[in-house]
Image 1: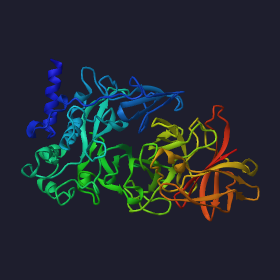
Image 2: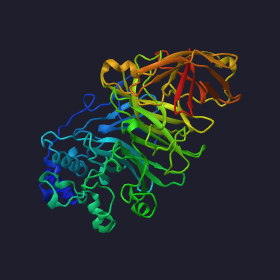
Image 3: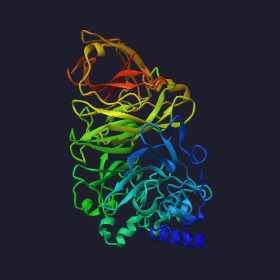
Image 4: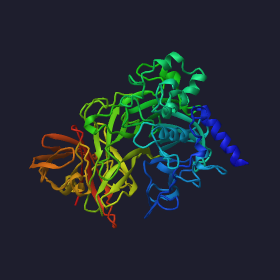
Length: 568
């Protein structure tokens, strides 16, 4: 009886959202998509206290425990941000995070999966083998709702057929009960009479736009004149977003926002109502520069980055007064050159600029490249395609960067990493080279004797480095150099590698350099071939088994390049 009731509820919800049987689209509960698990029996454990959480988001619960949430229903927890324990993982009915007792996963997430199922069927998908995707969640505690809010996306790979949705729970460990759709993408405005028989389910009235219209939130005139479509009436994905990768944050005044988006149309920003956890349509309808449904575009995808860009994150720093916007460019596989970029703004909705002064909306390669493909002597293998990052501020003020990375080990395996961010004297964040092990940034600085010596040196560059085949992987790993910071303030051993977008070295030439540390602080300036790199010194444990203490430098140039130096 319970199964029959659940199916009826699922059909009814799908009908309300416009994906019911009106146009012959099967209800979500009847569609048995291919289901799978990751890392064995629903675990994200990676050994040695590490976890494999893809697209990770970090939050601290009310009892002080840290939690990671990621794609495919993965979750892990930690008491110290260093050693992690797996909680859940995998797309299956026994995922305790997302599936309340007495339901299947498809019953629990009927509404968003109805949309992605319909989208796949429209374009010739096989009903017996449909994608079931739960991507890139972000979890916050909403004080006004008194709930933990789990925002995630369901999408059809490689298309803008997506929806961001909200589920809530009294417990951070769930189960999370589905609440509502937040925003859809990939719909059209073609009338039923003009549609081929297999495309009739994608009209915008079959998303929550139809529900909002019935409630009087949008007028027919607004919808008929909406600029979301091309001349053929199809979704204009070059200007409007793919609704994936939500990230929620509060601005300096306590207002709740969501940033989201990907390759299709760029990155968008949307004001949210804290009482409901859903979009603030009144704000968007009455504020210049905002689309009344999608919000405001703050990053444009560009041909110089292969129209890439996803996994946005905005973090406000009270001391500097900046909003820092992070995004991942490139492809997420080992050859795709995933890399983390950074912009900043004094206003929450931009404009966001990089260190060279370019806008995130400029149609060219922009953004400070915080992290690319690299290797250091203490590592067993090179780190590849690190990206889809999030930020977390600890109670003692440390700013951490959380992301997933792949490795040069012959497969597509990945793990989660956490590194501390430091803020330079000109107000940019830079990433420390090694995993966070509880280190504290120096408040008094270092002497010239401590700084002078030989270092491993990496320049992450400012291009997205891809490889066409695994045989070319070595070409997309940033070269590791040996340099020396001398007592006379010079830097010797520096070389500049000039490369194309596949990072194939075209030339190598030696250049001059110098260094200068600010007395009584941890700030340092490296000058390389005439370009100044503002940086920070810190002592970290390296990633060898011994965990050797190393003096490290992390610095950023006005050319959007970040450099690391690790004292030998």
